[in-house]
Image 1 (cartoon, rainbow, N blue to C red):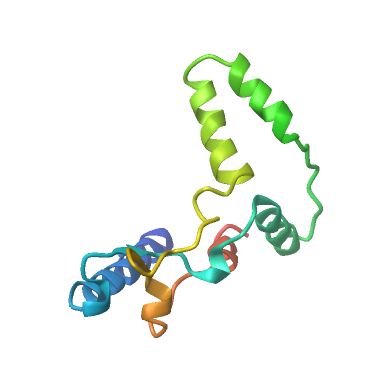
Image 2 (tube, rainbow, N blue to C red):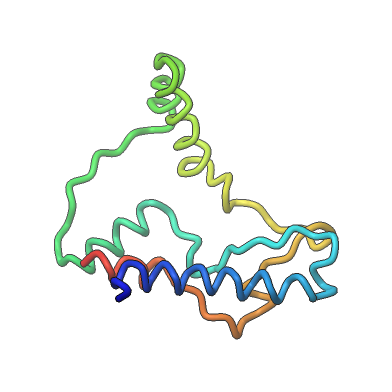
Amino acid sequence: METPKQFLLRKKILRLISYTIKAVDDPRTLNKIVYLRPPENILSINEIVSLWEKKIGKTLEKTYLLEDQLLKKIQESSSPLNLSLSIVHSAFEKGDLTNFEIKASFGVEASELYPEVKYTTVDEYLDQFV
């Protein structure tokens, strides 16, 4: 018998496979990078924390770190901590994973090409932990 966690994982894998199967035979994806970056899931860490607070009905205590402080920590830390902090800086401070436009000459966004494929939003994903 499948556990709820296994069921959710299977659903996520099937959605990813759906995008992949559609993209393989789609001339719009030929020689292009297919990004899976649904707009509803492009959230800052503060937006994710806010969503979580609404779900649990509590306000969490937060500690904020200025970019200069983070950069100083990166410089002062040894490996592997400095690598981890560099990734945090790139992803969360700079937004390097999502803060760019997909150029039509080399990429397409899957949820725009295939709006009929239902994806899990961050909001829906967090529901399983409440």
